Image (cartoon, rainbow, N blue to C red; front, top):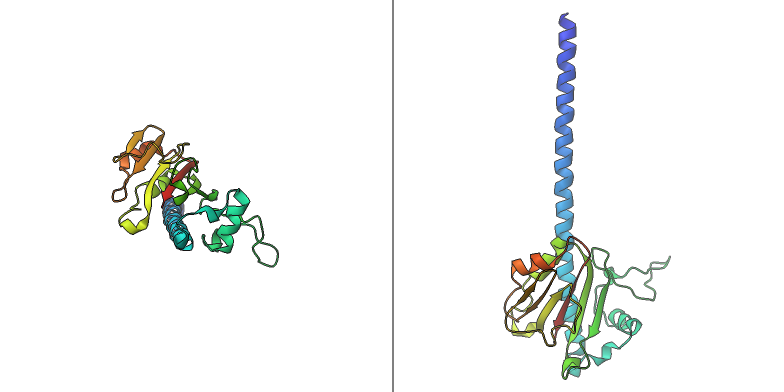
Length: 214
């Protein structure tokens, strides 16, 4: 009888240990996933910053961005040859580890990354360019939207839109943020998009953000 009790206690103890291990594993996995998501968010912001800076440097002496080209392939080629975007964003690599055309750039969340001249029908907008990041989850969307992009006049930042198809900041850009459910426009070089506007505009997944720079 004594052995049976001891065996019973051992079984209960074993189950308890397994339960504790299971809980710790779940918590550890959750923490790991959160850390990975945060890392990807930081990388996304870093990539946008680098593309904006490199593009402004590359075309600074020309006073406009017409050299980017007009077609998707032309712009991708310029992004590659002029090092406007980090090479680690490229996805087409051959068996020798060389980058090959078409030069497709992806963000850390596997969404397309593109660059284009601002709306040519607007006077002066050949002097601006637009960076577009697609397929962002809500956490990354909010992080990008509420980051400080125009804390100095030299940044060239004009504004951004979230999930809104229009002539980016051409006629809608006013001195204060425009908040809408499901989309958002933010303007202003020395302020950030209000968190409530970003939270309303960013969906759970599949978000796209466009940022305009001079």
